[in-house]
Amino acid sequence: MLVHGPYPLGEPRVEREALAARAAGWKVDVLATRRPGEPAEESIDGVRVIRLPLEHRRGNGLVGALREYAGFAALATRRLARGTRYDVVHVHAPPDFLVVAALLPRLRGARTILDVHDLSSDMFSMRFGDRRGAGAADRLLRAVELAAAWVADALVTVHEPYRAELERRGVDAGKLTVLMNSVDESHLPPRHDNGRANGGPFRVVYHGTVTPPYGVDLLVRAAARAVADVKSLQLELYGEGDELADVQKLATALGLSDRMHVTAAYLPHGEVLARVAGASVGVVPNRPTRLNRFALSSKLFEYVALGIPAVVADLPTLRAYFSADEVRFFRAGDPSALSRALVEIAADPEAASGRAEAARRRYEGYRWPGQASRYVELLERLVHRQREK
Image (cartoon, rainbow, N blue to C red):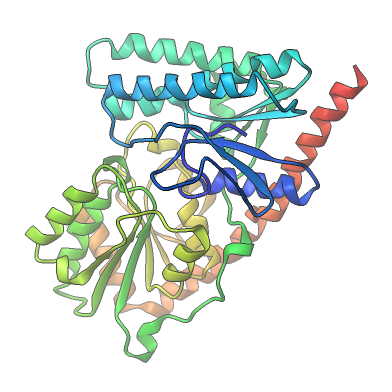
């Protein structure tokens, strides 16, 4: 597996798939970026992790991002050009052009999977869409996307709307498989009852990347407004990102800092879920951006699996997988609407618990064991196809 990011911190999808393959008897190597203090190589849960000498930095400018992406692709290409001969090379995108690192192994007989976490053109638009030449860049990224899809033997992506969009853009439908970002249940702690029944605080939680499109600043503004009606409100943020410092400054300016707990770092997946467990509400505050119209946050699945009532931005893909009877939607991008949703849940926890139970029933069809089986079947099918040639 190749991933332009840290492993296992910050890349739960990669970890889930690596562990699923390992449990099925595959030997798995993951080539990832390297964070300060991490060893260049180690074994984690039976997965060999090889960290290339490059750190992933969120919030890079355009030139810095291109340099980092190209640098990782070059390092991965060089690493795969020597040493182990692989049956499958699984490339996690973006960037789509990271598939170039799999070309030499492919000539040696390896099959290639391209795993589309997000559409590169939409990510570029989110970060740099207001720059001159953005239209040309969009067309180039779509062309690279199609070229990468042509090179790959199989494509996997995170949900049905992405699968349909990739097919609409010209990707061969026969290559596409959906593997949803549902929860590796081995990481789940025991379910907790809401602590407010025993006089505890009203715990509002968010875990993941703290970056402008994910709307964490909207959550801070909403929480600051809700305090007038929910005296025991406590906001908990677990994660890191390029907007974290600004979010902390905003909380101070709004008088919320004494009610807000921030880890300012990614935690091991099991640890962060243990901390989130028992929260009064989990929030997915995504802004209504081009990228987020396709967002189906893995944190939402985690809140649902833990039985935590969810407040969710009203966006198309989120609507496609859960209904208003299962999660509390609010108008995306509107902190006043989000604040009203928090106050409503605090005022009527019984209704919120009812939605959470309904969401959990819906989630039965999305659970990870079914996704993991589909992934292992794909690996076996690719290798069987190659051996038949």
